[in-house]
Image (cartoon, rainbow, N blue to C red; front, side, top):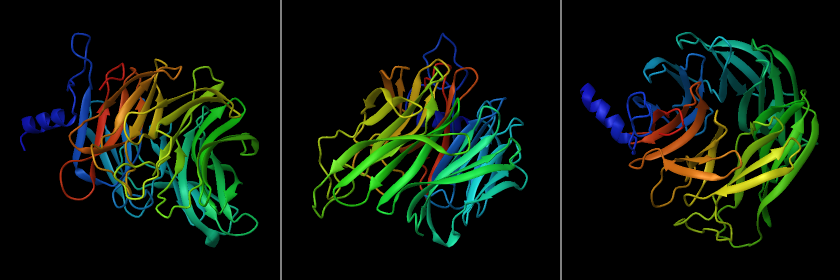
Amino acid sequence: MKPLHIYLLLCFLSGIIFSCKENDDSVQPGATWVKVIEENHVYSPGRIRADASENLFCSYSYTGYDNDSSSAMVKLDSLGNVAGQQDFPGLAIYDFQLNEAGEPMAAGFENGIVSMMKLSASLDEEPLQMGSYTLPLDPTKIRKLNGLKMLKQADGHFLLYGTVRYTKNPYNGWMAFFAGFDAGGSFEWGDTTYLSDQNHVSAITGCAESEDGFVFLGYNQFQGFPVSSEFFIMKTDFKGQVVCDTSYVTVQYDSMDSSYSGYYCETSDVIPALDGQSFYGCAFNVRFNIPFFAGQVNTADDNSARIFRFDACGNILARDSVKVDEQNQVSDLLLMKNGNLLLGINPYPLFGVYYTGQQNAFITLLNGELGFQSAENLQTKYMDYVSSMCNLSDGAVAIETIIQSFGGDGYRLQVTKTDKNGNF
């Protein structure tokens, strides 16, 4: 394919009007650039992070829809050109952050051991194993890892946190774990706490730093009748000891109908508000009220994504909801430099349940008071899925998505850089 044809294809794939050059005030607002990496098969997208020079690092899994197998990372320069790429066969990168030198510090988990790895900034060297934390649990009784994420603290240290299903008394349920590492990746402290019994599915999905500890957001799904689901906000000190814990029931369903197909909520990441005292997070339905799906559940709920602002102990200060599609599943949220909020939303799960009709990811813009401003598809021609967003120094935002548009197996990685006002 000739270079001109590639250029036209990428402009076409965006699905909206945008400029493939730096925008100025004389042209219609739109993306600064859109990059589709056609060569890479992607199954499960990961995170996108920017270094001080606005190089972008994007992680993903290339072997399965669960991010628990072989991973890869791509580095793009500030103009969207591929500047590095590395595959990690047999290695799962669940999350990563960049250290002060611009090197990816990646989170790993295997056989009950939480670990950190350092990758080279150029993505051309073998991962360097750093510190690790062995959970104080019998590894033969750990049945499932339900998420592992990573927070970079204000002092440059790192917190790894997640949830495992543990089937040994006295717990016999879901355990949250926390592991603190210094800026160089050396292990400092770790702890676990009980979340729920085995009749639930629980997970911690987000964490933010507060003045005197951490604020976590997560969910519990009760797997039985009557069916119920809740999200919780939990505050700990800097060593993982729980200070306060507040939960809110989001849904209930008490039918014994055998066609029941699922009625649960999940939650998003957590981000601190500009006031330094409150936080934003989302709760949304999964596998619920799915149109054209056999055995669907119909209730009064409209499948909106709920957005909340709350204090460190979980008291709700403000709330609103977003409904753009049949399903509104929040994959990421971002506080922009101008104080507005962006929500990355998908109308379907990445894998497992699909419905008839258009299946395109979209970005929703809210103001700091949770007032709805706009919603826009990243593109409208092909199936796509948005996974992660990050701020850039000029007020622009980088968005990682995957797009299924080139035939064959899996998706392709797509990265969009918005203009300075977040338009794409």
